[in-house]
Image (cartoon, rainbow, N blue to C red):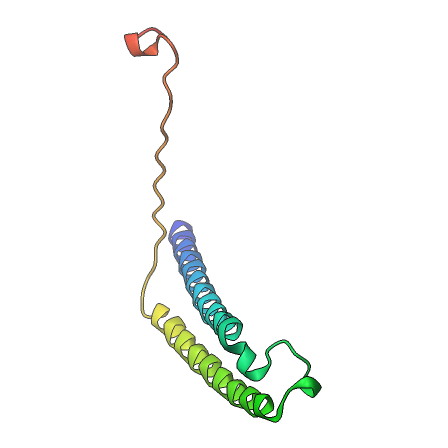
Length: 113
């Protein structure tokens, strides 16, 4: 009985770790993509400049970017929540195999110990 509970706990831990990893990768991709867009096109809305120094056109474009960025982040969060929900439909088990490549010591290849 206790062994079964331990096995279930290990499976749940593996599932949570995989879910957390996937969510983290999705968020990193989302934020990183927005950052690249800001670096490439941020000059349009004066990215990194104080608001007071912007032209009227840059101020308008900054507002457009703020709205679009919010929509992208909201949609990304929605998709991430869908991903989290999918994890609840599956059992996950961590099956790690280790392979060790050991160098032979001199003399071992001839059967000498």
